[in-house]
Amino acid sequence: MFSFFKKRPPAESTSTPPAAAPAASSSTAASGVARSAAPGPAPEVSEPAERLGWLSRLRSGLSRTGSSIAQVFTGAKIDEALYEELESALLMADAGVKATEFLLADLKRRVKAAGATDPAAVKALLADALADLLAPLQQPLRVGEHAPTVVMVVGVNGAGKTTSIGKLTRHLADANKKVLLAAADTFRAAAREQLAVWAGRNQVEIVSQEGGDPAAVTFDAVTAGKARGCDVVIADTAGRLTTQLHLMEELKKIRRVIGKAMDGAPHEVLLVVDGNTGQNALSQVQVFDEALQLTGLIITKLDGTAKGGVLAAVALWSRSRARPVPVYFIGVGEKLEDLQTFDAREFALALLN
Image (cartoon, rainbow, N blue to C red):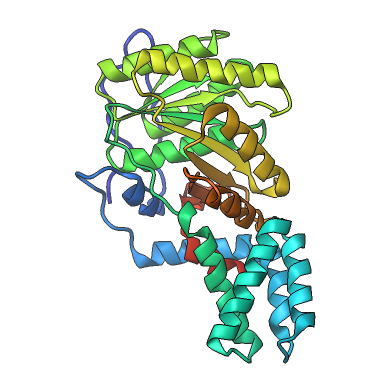
């Protein structure tokens, strides 16, 4: 297993050097790194027990969403009453009307084709239908195709954006990627300090300015990342409500300025979404995508929510597009190992367990 902390070159005057930090727990799962890293030196493959531990946490986290759906299949008959109960359960799980209709139609087709007569078999076929619907969302986050790969992270306040950046940075550091953070959330109190803590824990450099212009911070960070041979530059931006148009314009400005600092950047525009928000999560995805052309999602706080079915709504929306917006990572807790790569079948089976 790679050391969690990598020694970095001394920071230049435009950035803050990482603070010393104690070694982290060796329980960190490497699966998210292995799938997100570019070809080249890779960390050891994680032990099966680590992924099994993740699956257990995922099932536990999705239990409130999945319990009402699973109860539908406790009866003895496959009839219209079962499908009506399933429809209600999916809607209550915030799968949305369109995704619910899609899944029910697909399920009925599969049941007929398989000649299924047992509710348990129908439940398994629903897992297949859900996994197939979610499959296009399962794509790896790639780094290494650009030097550096510039990642712009956006989201509304409270979604877990800065914490997700910290966890993602750790995964990348475990894959021996040199990461530079940009503290472009210059408005929220203590946001810069919060990101600096994560930089210290992960032993990576951070570019920040107290009260500075967010776009200027990102420009400086991308320029510094190029000069220092960084593999990845991650820009933390201020939380934005989608209804505040002038704030969304600020994000568009940051995106444009990043492009001026490096042609073709940002290479990834990630939206962090709170899974507890249900159908509002889909609205956030749509509005942020229209403004910024999202390349991927991180879904957080799926533990304890009864609204995990929203991923089906996101998948159906993404399915209708020429350019799908994948879910790179999902989170079911506060610990580092609680943010892992999204796997469609794992999710479907955990939801219906």
